[in-house]
Image 1 (tube, helix red, strand yellow):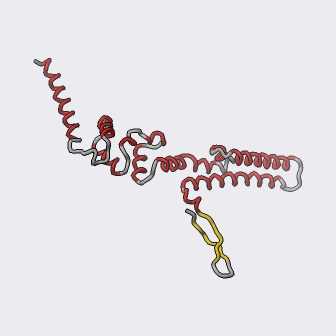
Image 2: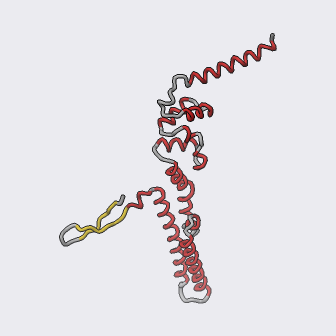
Image 3: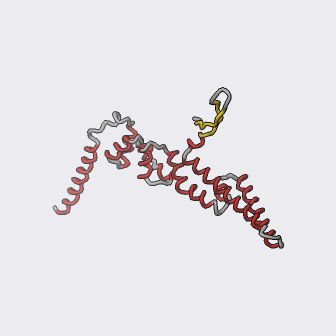
Length: 208
């Protein structure tokens, strides 16, 4: 009798659990929710509960998209992905935003110390090579002026050239990452428009 007791209890527990799972979806109309039968079946097979599904639908995320776990490819957490999607961002926006926050802006500031670092990382080869050549030339001029008995402090001119390359590289990187974070900034421009019969004035214009 005791040997049969455990299997019977286990069977009752399994039946009760299955009944509870079915009851959770008993009054759920997947067609009214805009889901296909296949999507709904995948939701149940994944173990997703009703509360989670309703939250996804409220923020405009289809369960078929969620089940692919796109946040892993974007390099963010599930929580971050859901929060950004709830705010209206799509995956492309999330990818651009987090990539810039995670690396590009920090790299841009580091480029002030290591000229052309950002340009090489973003495949701006021509610009990076030009910066490297100018820096090498400026360093060579500084060394030449400092070691060949030039009068006064003429070697400072070479050093100023080195500094100019550092500033150019860093400033270029900062501007590039600001545009990446705010694409609308690219649409701003200055234009010249007539303000009177015989006069012109500068005015800011926005291009969309």
